[in-house]
Every structure is written in structure tokens, then in C-alpha cells.
Amino acid sequence: MIFGRVKPLDAILATAEKKSLHRSLGAFQLTMLGIGAIIGTGIFVLTAEAAQKAGPGMLLSFIIAGFVCAVAALCYAEMASMVPVSGSAYTYSYAVMGELMAWIVGWALVLEYAVAAGAVSVGWSGYFVGLLREYLGIQLPPEIVNADALIAHLKLMFGATPSEAISTAIATGGFINLPAFVIALLVTWLLVIGTRESAVVNAVLVCVKVTALTVFCLLALPVMNSANFEPFAPLGFAGISAAAASIFFAYVGFDAVSTAAEETKNPQRNMPIGLIGSLGVCTLFYLLVASGVIGTVGAQPLLNPDGTGIAPGSTELAAACATQGGEAVVCSKEALAWTMRSIGWQQIGNLIGLAAGLALPSVVLMMMFGQTRIFFVMSRDGLLPAALSKVHPRYHTPYVVTIITGIVVAIFAALFPVGALADISNSGTLFAFAMVAISVLVLRRTDPGRTRPFRTPAVAIVAPVAVLGCIYLFFSLSGYTLSLFAGWAVIGLFVYFFYSRRKSYVGRGIIDVHEDDADVPPQPVPPLPGAHTPGGSDA
Image 1 (cartoon, rainbow, N blue to C red):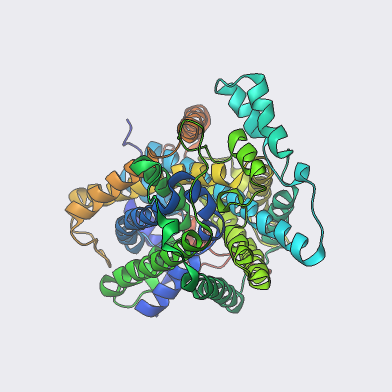
Image 2 (image 1 turned 90 degrees about the vertical axis):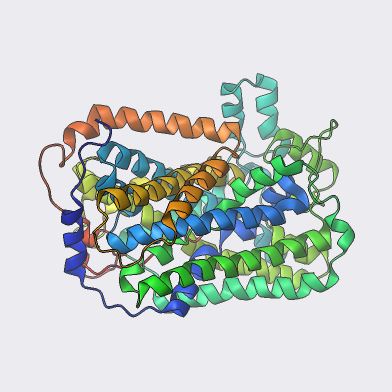
């Protein structure tokens, strides 16, 4: 039965009662938390990807993606306030729709966290390579900074001829992204030994990111040329939709606000302010930054001879960029820094690159941390091997699952370009968010009397809009991305029916709750404490 094996919500909530966290966060603190969690790779890196898909129309793409995030966030907040324990959408689904759906959601969250960590690693690599070039005069060879070889093999699988596939790698001379591989392994090591960001360091990094974007806006907006906004939608609304599906990655992380529900004063008032406030501020920032890019250096996509857009990351785009000497923002792997240098602010561009280089590794850390904790909870539910939940005797961290996750992230980062990784990550995220919105509706009907510290306003409208918005963006992703998602889902179902279903604690009648220590960041002190720490995946 699809909706069988429900993990009792009362048993899960017993964990939250043990935590007894103090409600101290107000609307301002929640908004700042959200801004810090949201601003990251999406705006620093994927601006070029959005420009190639939508041109100046990417301004609408940011608005569409932000709106879908806002309605999904309101649903997420209700579940987070009711079930304030680790496991995110996986735990919510287990309590509402049963084990199979929970497994599928947990499996999809691998794409949200692990693949996204790979995307951020690749985004960091682009800025790191630029910093080496600008500050030290070191030009790394393309063979070790462009990840195109695996894409070439995948193109073969999807029907391209051998010559077409091989030319993908040859066009840019790239086979592996070594800096992205190294940073992913370095973050894995930090997580294993228990190093974590302090609140002070995190606050400093948030200030660095926000300052960098503010400086960009102050210098770029005054010198905009309105002619660069024409044509506004060179590839039509289909291009805007495709860009919105990709740029959705720029908003992932707002769940940092949702998961802080149990520590929020007056959550019914402050949660929507924090959620909508942080998304609103970030959307405004994104629109200003995108306008600065469009108005100063232009953001028209490079086109095929027949007038269609060239696919980002393709052989054709690499060839088109080569003919222009890379003098187009759609060709840049460090779009904001490149824009500043192009309008005469060489050192400011370098500083923006430095800001991204400093801030993005912390994003990789938080995403990988989120992934390991999802696996950790699934392992303690019996759905994954118990060995994954082993804690290191010295560092007191779940080192087995952390090392496995880190190796997988490093491989993704080494072999895939950032746009492909972001789209794959978005597919899992959109699926998980849609399931959370459905869970809210189901639980309103099946358990209407349960205490809800935060209630989604106009849930009969907001939740369906969230589901439809996620579906709309999901199917705006490329066919290649959807094929990979379907393949990943099939693998997940295979694992579930041939292993997890037999090993499940709920299926075997073992009702226990272990999440009380799974969502605490690793520390170099005795065993994982039971206090909940709100976290987010800064994308």
C-alpha cells in the first residue's frame, strides 16, 4: 500500500518536546537568517546561465522563481512548526503519506543537497580560477578546470554521434574540474573532524556577500544603457520559463527560516514576515544585480543560425564563445566579477571574485551537512544500512556517511558543469517542495485539531499554487535533466523494494525516534547534543 507504514506523528513530536527550545527569534532575525542562507552561488554564477536562456527576460525569471519559493515556503513553515525535528521534507512525508513516499522524497533530497553542493563547488572553482589569473598571473590549463568529458559520454547515451559527443570535451579542452574536486574533499575533511562555522564567522560571510552585491549595484546601475534591454525576450516565454527553472537554485536555502519555527516568538506573525521578507529582499537584490549586468554589458543569448538559442554548456556555445574571444557575459564562469572588469572596475571585479571565493565554501559545508543528516536519519529508520549512522569515536561525527557523501559530491563537481548540476539539484528540490505542500493539505484534512504554531494562510489556495508552481518549474527543466531525475527515481525505487522495505524499523514494528541528535552540526566536543540548530543550504 503506497500510503501505508506511516511513522506516528506523535512519536516524532516526542523528540521536539525533549528539546524545549527557547523562542527568541523575531521577524528581523528571521529575515536576516533567510538572506544569509539564500544569497550564494545562484546569483554569483548562474546569472550567465539565465542570460543564455532568457536574455534580459531573466528579470521575469527571478520574479517567477521567487514567487514559487514564497508559496512553497509558507507550506514548509507550517510543517516545520508542527514537526520541528531533523529530516526536513523526508520526516514530514513519513508522518503524513507513509514510508514509500518518504523514501522517494529522501532520495530526491540527495539531488537537493549533494548535487547542489557539487554545483556550488563548481561555482567556487570559476571564481578561484579567475582570482589566480588576476592576482597571481596563473592561468590553469583548461583540461583541469572544464568538466565536459562526462557530458560527452551522456550525449552518446541520448543519441548524439560519437563525433558530436567527443567534440563537446574537445571544444573547451576540458575533462575534469580539479579545483571543484579539491574544495569538495576539503569540506568533507572539515565535516569529519567536526569543524563548524561559528555564528560570528557566518555573520561576517553574510556581510561579505551582501556588501559585494551592494557595491556591484552601486557601480553598475548608474551606467546602464537602456538599449541593452532590447529585445527583452529574444527566445520568448519558453526561454523565460527555462531560466526560471534554473535560477530557482538562487533561492534554495529559505528553509533555514522554516526550520527555525520552533525558536520563533509569535510564529504566526513572524514566520511569514521572515519568509516573505527574506525572499523579497533577495528578489530585489537579484533584480538589481541582473539589471546591472544587462544594462552595462548586455545579456543577449548567443543564437544558432536558425535563430534558436544555443544550449548552455553545449559544444555549440563553447564554439560561439571562442569566436567572440569570450567577450560575452553568457560565456563567463564568474559573471559578476567579469562584468565589473568589463566596465573598467578591474580591482572591484577582483574583490567581488574574492568575496565569492571566501563565502562559497561555507555554502558547500552547509549543503553537505544537510545531506549527511538526511542520510543519518534514514539510516536510523532502517531504510539505509546502519553502518551509515556510525559516529566517529574521537570526533563524534557521523563520519561514514560524511565520507561517502563527500566523495560523491567531489565526483559530481569534478565531472559536471555548474548549470547541469544546478538543474539536476532543482529537479529534486522542486519535487520535495511539492510533496511538502501536499502534506500540508493532507494533514489539514486527516488531523485538523493538531496544534499548529504556524498555519499557512489561505491554505486551500496557497498549497495548490505551490504544487502547481513546482510542477511548472519542474517541467520547464531540460529533457536531459528530467531524464536523469527519472533514472535516479528508478534507482531509488529499486533500492527501496530490494533492501529498505525489508529493513525498515516501522515495517518491523519498531517505533522509535532518533532524530533528536541528528540535526546538530558536528563539533569537536563530546557526543552530538540534542539541541536543534536551524540551518539552511545557501545556494
